[in-house]
Length: 200
Image (cartoon, rainbow, N blue to C red; front, side, top):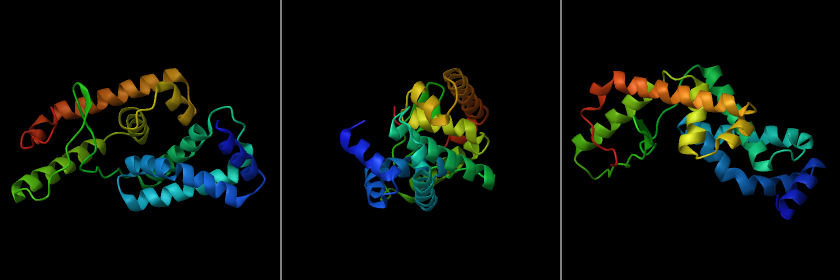
């Protein structure tokens, strides 16, 4: 932990709102990004990121430095998003530039040039809806580990800390989530035949 960050945390634990505001400034982009990947739209991401920081400020006195402050904060935003998804019992909206999982794993999808012919734009919208339908069939727990591992790039150990579960649980959950997504894609291959926006 950097000295300046440690000082800000210590001050925040004493109720210093200004110090906590500086911590927010350090991490707001990363927290927002995770929320956006979970929820799929900027409005929800902004609201849930704000909620996560409120929870973090209320709980900062309990931070003991056993994990990094970043990991502790990511644990909070992951829980906030998971709770919201469970409460709504609905799934995320997939952005057009979100990665797609194939039999070989996740690959990047190009964002469309909106100056393209209308039929190409329609294909991408259709692809977005298709991926969303498949993701809608995954549990929030599966989506959570896929976002953290395949999109955010966290290690298994970091994910275990963020989700407060064992390393073995993380590995098995990721394996099951990947298999579930592969099975869904294999069972719906015809839905992808009209699209060709995947990067080789």
